Image 1 (tube, rainbow, N blue to C red):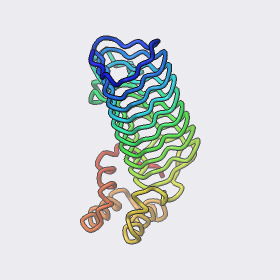
Image 2: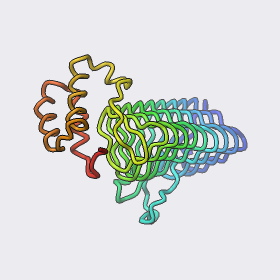
Image 3: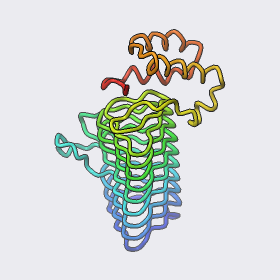
Image 4: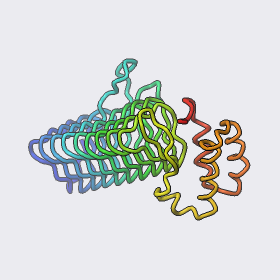
Length: 263
């Protein structure tokens, strides 16, 4: 066990041998931290939190009370292999969140990037890959193997089917159920999700400038107003991407998309 002298740990919490706790970490009462867990500098863990498995938590995170972090996956194929969960820096994780570690079939690791906000009751299934600066509203859930792009937003009480991709800057409105992929910067809603326009409030879209914004509007028009084929849209993206760097998000999206996109 390696615990920094500046860490503050409530007397009622249980820290197993083999845990690494960095400087200025705060662990509230009645927590259980199992062997193999690493907690980075400045992270604050509220009361009644359980963290187990091969879980690595970065710097300056906040984890709400009653959360379960690094639990084994609910995938029936999981057979006790040494898989893990990695959480980056500056994330805010609300109370009663459940974040599961990966499976061998999914690469072995669930990953969460930096500066994300997960509200209370959020669930992340095994092998999810979450980017940076995302938002997941309360009681929303990502099933296993979901890819959530940078700056994407999922509003409250929404659900994403396993193996789906939510592109960078996309947004799911409240009470949305997604069973196919959502392209970058697309806003979607309903059960099952349908396109509702462009998420023009996302930070990267706002920074892009009018020319690239109009290119994204043009691609949305091809997909959803003119009902062009995916191959036609992909060829337009390839043609334009050398001049407009924001289209790299679309290239990455279509490279990995396998479930088809929402229509």
